[in-house]
Length: 75
Image (cartoon, rainbow, N blue to C red; front, side):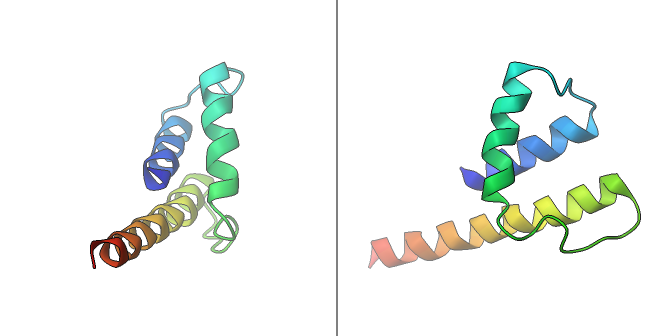
């Protein structure tokens, strides 16, 4: 679920969602803290590429964490 929020935030930024929209603000308020230390980790010189890489890494992190938790619960 956390990874989905990160991906949704990436897509909303890339497709130019209105930053004043209430839904955008809601997703942003969830995505930014969930990204943990990943935003700013890589600075590649392109704002969109930075966003994709940094928030994409956060999404992958949450997928890995969810997978590990699911394996622990399944035992």
